[in-house]
Amino acid sequence: MTTANRPEPQAPQRSDFARDFLWGCATSSYQIEGAGRDDGRVESIWDRFAATPGTIRDGSNGLVACDHYHRWPEDFDIARGMGLNAYRFSIAWPRIFSEGGGAPNQKGLDFYSRLVDGMLERDLQPWATLYHWDLPQTLQDAGGWEDRATIDAFLDYTDAMTRTLADRVKHWITHNEPWCTAIIGNFEGWHAPGKTDLKAALQVAHNVLVSHGKAVPLIRANVPDAQVGMAVSLHPLRAASDSAEDIAAKERHDGLRYRWFLDPLFGRGYPEATLSQVGAAAPDVAPGDMDAIAVKTDFMGVNYYFPETVAHAAGHAPLDTKVLPPTEGEITAMGWPVVPEGLAELLLRIENDYHPGPMYVTENGSAFDDVVGADGEIDDVQRRHYLMRHLASLKAAIDGGAPVKGYFAWSLLDNFEWAEGYLKRFGLVHIDYATQQRRLKSSGKWYGAFLRQA
Ligand code: FCB
Image 1 (spheres, rainbow, N blue to C red):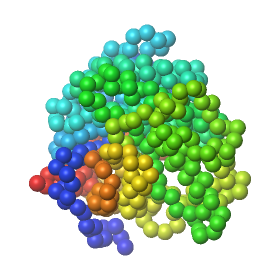
Image 2: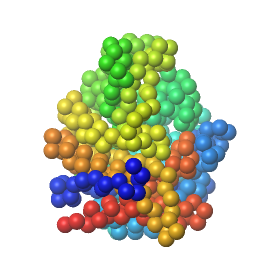
Image 3: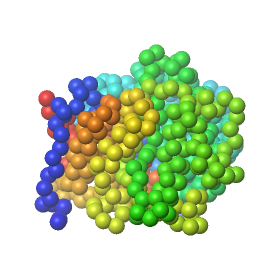
C-alpha cells in the first residue's frame, strides 16, 4: 500500500484521558540549541566526538543545529499554538560549567532563566532534564562518568541549576537514558565518548545511577514541591524463535537492558544472574551506593520507540546475544519496527514489576524521510499515524492499570540525531537547515487538533 492512501487509524479523543493529563513535546540541548560557542559555552563530549572523522554519518555536528538558542520564542510560539501544556527540554551542562571549577557561568544560568520564563509565558509546564548526554569535555578528560569525581561535579551543577530555577521549574529529570550514556557511549562506542570497554561502561552506568540517587534529595532541598525522576529507555523484548537458546538469550539481554537499571532503582540491587554473566566487568560499588540509588522518586519517565527481537549469538559480546533487525511490518527511517502495542506492553510490565508510582512517557516518536510539497506542506502521514496509534496504545495501557499521567512526543523539531547527524527527522515541526525556516508537519497539525478538542 502506498503511504498516501492508507486508511486513517482510530485515534483516541483527548477526553479519553484525564483532564490534567500532560501533553508535551521533548527536545534536548545539544540536538537543537546550536550556539556552540556563545556566551561562554565550553566544549562537550559531543563536540569532540562529532569532530572525530567517521563518527557522524553526514559529518555534521551540533554547533548550529536548529539555532534554538536564538530562535526559541518562535519555537515556543509553535508549541503553544499546538496547544501543548508541557515541554521537556535539557540543560547544556557546558553552558554552566566553568573550567577549573569556581562559580557557574552566569550567562548560561541567565539563558535557561529566560528560556523557562518563555515557557511559562506560554503556559508550557517546564520539565527540565539535567543530563541528556552533553558532558563537558574537560570532565571527560579527567575520567568522565567512570570517575566518581564526575558525580560530585554533577551535584555542583545540579545545585546551581535547581537554585536558579527553583521558583519556576518543579519537574526535574536527573538523567536521560543511562543505558545510552553507559553502554552505547562506552561499550558499543557509536556515541560519545566512543569507548568500547564493558568494564568502563558498567562503571559509568553505576556512577550515573549514584549521581541520580544523590541528586534527588539535593533537588528536593532546593526546590519546594519538586517532582523528581529519571527517564529510562526500554524495549519490550521478544525471543527470535521458540528455541530454548533464543529464549535464554532474551532473558540474558533483559537482565542487562532492563533489570540492570530498574532493579537497583527499586532497591533490589543488580540482578544476580547478570552480575555473574558480566564477571570481572561488574562495577566497583562503594558503601552506601545501592541505598543512594534506591532513593524513592516522584515519577518514572519511560522512553519508548520499538520492541527488540533477541537471538542467541555465540561469541557476540557481552552476553552471547544479538538484537535482530525487523524482517516484517512497517519500519521507520531508523530501521526501527513500528509496534504501537509495544508501548502498552512495556508500561504494563513496568507497573507489574515495580509499581513505580506515576509514569510519564517522556519520549516516543518516529523518523521518516519527509518531503516538502510544492505548496510548502509536509504530509508526513506515517509519522501522523505512528502518533495516533501510539496514543491509542497509551490509552490501552491506562485502561489496563498503568498510572500514566503525561505524554511527550519526540520531538518538537527535526534535530541533530546523534550519530545520524541531520539525516533523520523526528520533528513534528520541519526544519529547513539552510534557512532555519520552521514548518508544522501534518503530524504536528494533527496533534494540535487533538489537543484543541474539548
Ligand atoms: C532517544 C534519545 C533522543 C533521540 C531519540 C530518537 O534515545 O533520548 O535524544 O535521539 O532517541
